[in-house]
Length: 94
Image 1 (cartoon, one colour):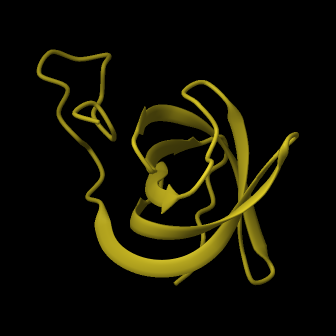
Image 2 (cartoon, one colour; image 1 turned 120 degrees about the vertical axis):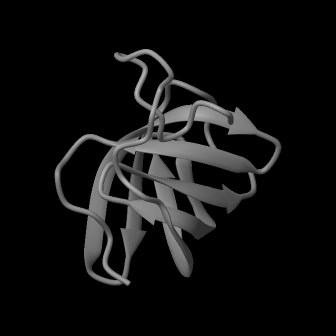
């Protein structure tokens, strides 16, 4: 979890984008099914989500909220939380 949102391509891994704390209900879908989630932190490049039976690190995932969706990859997994790195330049709206 310590590496979520940090740059790994420069020394010190400084974050370029500020994460915004949010509380957004949504869903996470994979090839194996769908789960309800709570998005806890959000920025242009990723999100931190909480939910049950979420996929493991490295898995592809589709986050949805209302009529918006964004594809990403699970960057880290810790308990019921996951760090998601988005594959696109758009983010879920608040």
